[in-house]
Image (tube, rainbow, N blue to C red; front, side, top):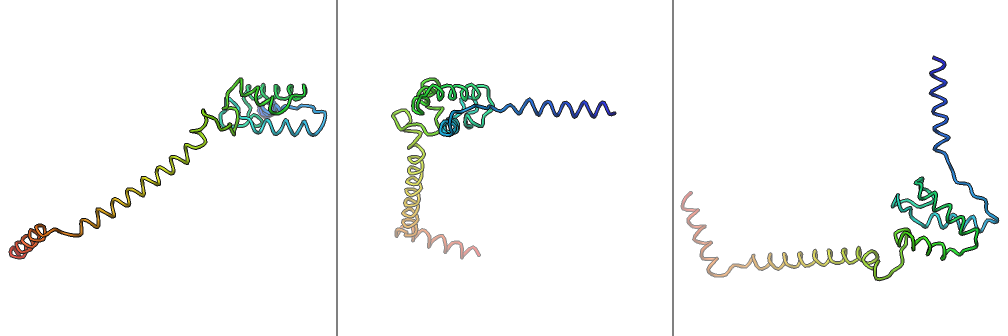
Length: 157
């Protein structure tokens, strides 16, 4: 029984250590550490799709953190690092892609869809109001027919 408990406890302990692999990088100054943190939080993991590089456990995110660290140590600017990653993975790696011809629908599509929906709803309301107002007035022929129908219904009772 003791062996079983020790084996289970040991397995849990080792599995916890295996999943707790944390990247540790040494920086020359606090400014580089902050740049690294900012870059890894602003860039999206290509595999996880909606998780930044800093929080992703995917192997590609680990490689990208290592690559960003290397480029920072070489003295490259944030723009150079971002452009390098965009050239490899496309604008997808940015959480805030630039406004250009390829991303216009991404930036303005939701507003256009919302505006189009509001315009459609407004047109439907106006059309129903006009149809409702026009249907309350009867032409003389319809009034005559209605009177005949009402008279026949009263005679049946």
